[in-house]
Length: 334
Ligand SMILES: Nc1ncnc2c1ncn2[C@@H]1O[C@H](COP(=O)(O)OP(=O)(O)O)[C@@H](O)[C@H]1O
Ligand SMILES: [Mg+2]
Image (cartoon, rainbow, N blue to C red; front, side, top):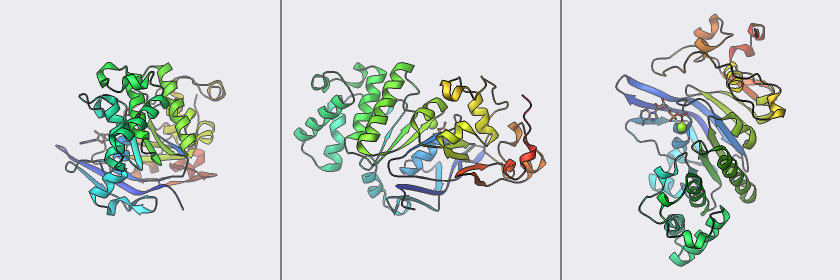
């Protein structure tokens, strides 16, 4: 019960020229203290919108949030003033994004940007904040940090910019780090370095991490528990080993199969690339049935008639799939 973050029944809609479109459709989940929760799914399934909702960063209009509650350390963020939410953001919940250039200020030297949250949130003097900034730049392995303080973002490589973002996120010692595709734009070696940096910080500071990615390899490496999202819904939830060992939802199975082999241990269980056929549905006007039904190799009539609930299938693993009640409908033909 005593989770760091608890999201209950989150709905997010956007006004579009075609009418209201649902981006997140009843998502409920929690993050425990010190846990890394992976959130995976194809592009457009609602991952970023979910994380921005937690931080109160969905622009309205065109976006509208509805939820039973979003509890952070027992406080319902939905009932806080925007000023109070702003204080939590950056200080207690920090976020890093795929593309650091969108969040770094191009005309401010990086030292100033890393020191800024301390000055703004904690009222620390400039001199002290810069000292702390150097410490964090060292920590995230920016070579010769002291000399780099006056560099501008464009003078740095993509990997270095992502390190700066992490330093900025960490200066106030957040309890929750939301990392949205933090390594997607980076090449593989740099990606591995950034992931191990995040993992190290998490251990050291006993922080919780919400790791958003479309890459199941990243999740396998980093997460304790995983949520699989499809068309705005959580369709499966499991600890990371169970998910790779015995995925329940046909969508999760498809995702795992479409992943290039990442690791011998997991790779043995997987076949190489069978793309999930079909495309992710547009979420306007879908009211009944399972959203994955028209792409699902096992779909039977009930699937397009009635929406399945997210229910336990085994030892805390949960899936939103009628195969839970009708296991005989699962027939592998490969
Ligand atoms: N500002 C917006 N206005 C309209 N639609 C939006 C807006 N932001 C996101 N969406 C829609 O919400 C859905 C989920 O997007 P997003 O959360 O960014 O997906 P993901 O991060 O999983 O790739 C998409 O269909 C996207 O087009
Ligand atoms: Mg996204």
